[in-house]
Length: 364
Ligand code: SAH
Image (cartoon, rainbow, N blue to C red; front, top):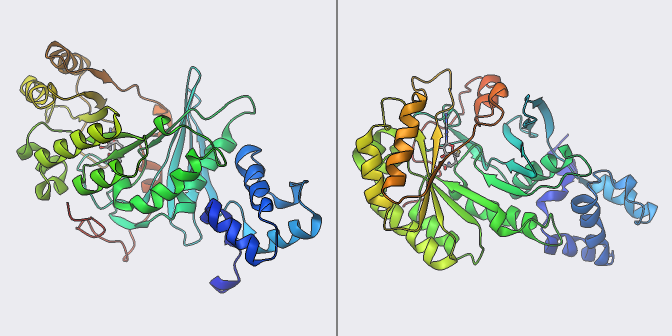
């Protein structure tokens, strides 16, 4: 079927643009609010079940839109009740999203790109390069799908943009999707419960600071000096740690939100005491928090997490130097919840794959 005859994806429409669509179709604007209420509040994804809409309108909507566009190519549940979905889009590209459960917390982790161009050497997401950006509807659909996994008495409490891709390399689509996650007429999740993780693109960090939103920012530092960071996070070569921490300081000054620095511990690579001391010097005067992440094994990659005492020692050095730090708990270990792994397993490299280059990377 040619593309123009396919139904449109409802989630591509913002609140305003769905209102416009209704107006152009001669439908009162309050119907747009009703439709969004059914989807976001009542978790109903079939127009036919939207009883407050007249039947002819339900039929018309059914022929014009699909509410959920992806095919769920895999749905896994780990022994700790972490769930992971592999969503496949019309063009057969797929991304992962995850639901993590911890006491009363329900956290969704979502992707922003198909693949990634950053090339971090320990990460599964970038192994096949970048295929394309996700649209605002595709980003939003992941959150809607995760909500659909929740039981009636569960509520989404947090969202982390820490899945496949570099969120700040697809910032417009992300901000558009998050507007609906955050809006009281959307999913209604507070901005302070949303965390965006970035490899560290200073210009985009500043743009995000100026968006007027109170999202949390997490910066994937992974090394305390440029020489080491250039090896682990190749894009650093054109950016540099100094620019990144300055942009993070600007983020804090503009939003009042304390920035988190993520640091993946790779045994024998970036986990020595000297690295912890250098990191302390870099961060101790800043209002920052360090999240230490013992590396999740990726079978195709020659890195692994350090032995436990080493991780503890790294943490102690930061703490002794007055840098607040925590070790991230692993969730969903038995389903390979480290993002990118499921997609990687199911994908075969294809000739159109964009290699690990500067494509789609905004100039720092
Ligand atoms: N592009 C964004 C989002 C990436 S995923 C960023 O760089 O922040 C979120 C975090 O998981 C990042 O800190 C990323 O470096 C980290 N990560 C990637 N692969 C990992 C692995 N195998 N083990 C542990 N953490 C990993």
